[in-house]
Length: 101
Image 1 (tube, rainbow, N blue to C red):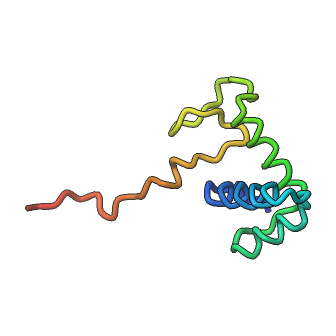
Image 2 (cartoon, one colour; image 1 turned 90 degrees about the horizontal axis):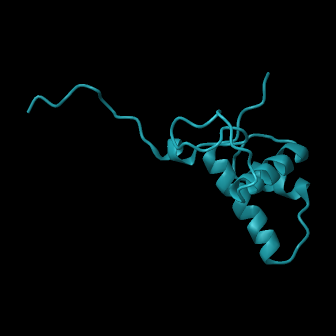
């Protein structure tokens, strides 16, 4: 079975966990980060996948990503290592039929 992609909510939680560790000047132990994500109800991830996700996301936010043609159709950002936070915020309409009134 292929691993699930990171969701926008999981990225936000990962960022908050790491920020809280850095705020307290504590060394980031990836096993602890994985355990905290699991406590929050996110799927099981390896330490390496969580670390790589954080490092790639940090690099992309710093502008270090190479611009290419694989862009997100929703927000326009580079697709590699990207989870569209805009897509997580968009809600599907309950009913596509117009109101008759």
